[in-house]
Length: 402
Image (cartoon, rainbow, N blue to C red; front, side, top):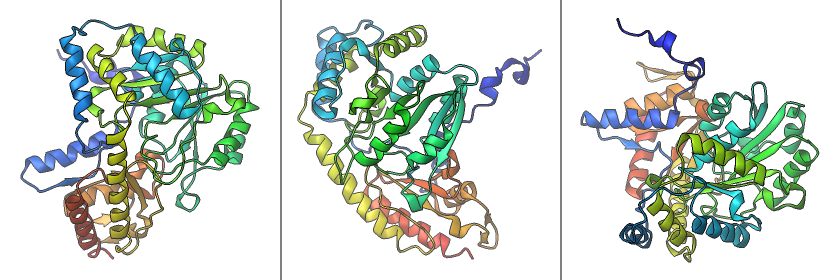
């Protein structure tokens, strides 16, 4: 007799949503496998290869025999290098024991949530948000409290809304800057206003997701953890996937107060232990570099952003803001809700993304996964030829809807 999955699977898994970005990317791959020419703008992955000097560093580490287990929180050499990076670039002062290296920034966030949240504890999440924040909070036993802002506010909730959402159950506040999915960047003034709110709340820790730090087009990057009133109140999360095009290397890290680092070390020690040894050797070399390749990638992303915005603005009904970082456009497509081409009707953002895949053969991700049902996310981490063709397909397809 086969086991009944409904009875076997834990309730926490049954209530968990599948990652929308991964789901739409798979749908695009499935359609392409049938011979359809699909342009997938779904995943948040640089289309650049990892720089050669980083790959060589991994090879050299292998040749030196760096193939054994590492300490759970990462090699001491890498943690020292991360401390130096934090001090130099972010004005953050950590000791190596306050750093935990994980298998991606996603694991760092999960470690923190599992360390801090218990049943009924609340985590304020600023929306639009990265798809996994809500699900990680729920999986950790916490309650997501979503505070949203629309395109008219550059997708950044005001500090007063955060203050209103604070309760005696608030344990976390989670946000990213530059933001996935919107590309919005929090200014120093906005971060200080947020810090003032959190500083007055005795039990709230901030998770500042800064994975897109190096893809910031028009302003300086500010780390909220560097403010005087935020000492010991922030977990700063970063990694190597975006700025160094090291997505498949699965390396992220967090810096935080000692009690939190100890807790994350304990959680990670029971789930995955340390990250790959030779990857950490390469990560040291990446952080010690002059960022030459990183800067060139940022220049390319800026050029693509400007191209994509110019193309999208030629499509009637689409609303776009000016994303100042990351490599996404989070466009408001609500103009097309209720329209039809005679065979299919767009009722919401989910429909829009599905129909653009099947009708225009362009892969997008619905904004419902990011906390905004009026929008869809488009990644411009693709070639200029693909971006031009994708925009042309969207324009021609949407012209048939009325």
